[in-house]
Image 1 (cartoon, rainbow, N blue to C red):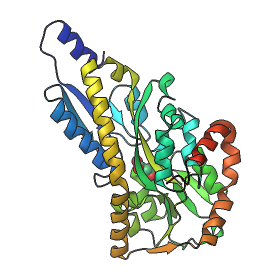
Image 2 (image 1 turned 45 degrees about the vertical axis):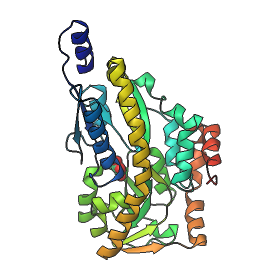
Image 3 (image 1 turned 180 degrees about the vertical axis):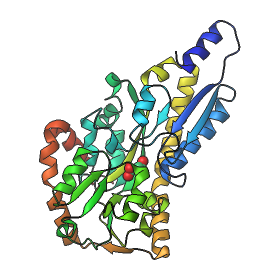
Image 4 (image 1 turned 60 degrees about the horizontal axis):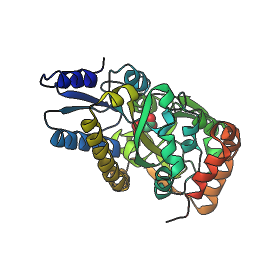
Length: 324
Ligand code: SIN
């Protein structure tokens, strides 16, 4: 029986309810959009549900790395996680949409899609597996780094790239004739340092907070994809909460989501500027023509995954572009 159900049973028996403990586990540093969001959620939940809810935040893969997060949630060992949207493909093929290269022009387009009917529906796409999405949190656009300057897609040929556990990202690097390797986030710095892999793709905030720029000589500002998150809980835990607690937590999640999403761009810009100041890696800007060449090289990935994702969903995401 979950902690929430025990607490509920005690209330109806007239016994003082025990505090509900929510463990929120994630893999990134605290000075990132997700790191900040988890702390804001804790602060608001403990303020507005004082005595009823306690939130324990475990950053930096302290409790679970990204290979184990979903299992831990299913087993009730944690109650909230926020994996990158690239890490759900074992549970829902549709969410692979977000990994299609060059799908969204910018994070404003991602936001429009996520807040539209198709995006909202995806939050419920894992309910049959026992998971509910409570909201989307932004990180930002991905950049690509290596110890070799990457100006044209041909420059990536033969290099080993760390990728998240996503078949779309695997196909994306295979389309460049590179060698992608799925690897947990917590292992990336060392893999770059010792040369197990030559490069990686990530947002400015993750690159800076993990110090990847100290072990990568070149970062290409490609903006070729996104890292965003779905905050997920288990259906057992969520549905077992007392109604008043659940509705307050829903309201808090909505408020925190809006704050994280407002902050994410600034956090990434600041991280980029700190990387520039550190002077350890060259930041490569692509011309329009150069960026087009990357887009064309990665384009075959769309057709490959269209049957699993669905042409209509892809079209809905594309329609979110250009609306700002
Ligand atoms: C994250 O932002 O949660 C991690 C992304 C990654 O694995 O690269």
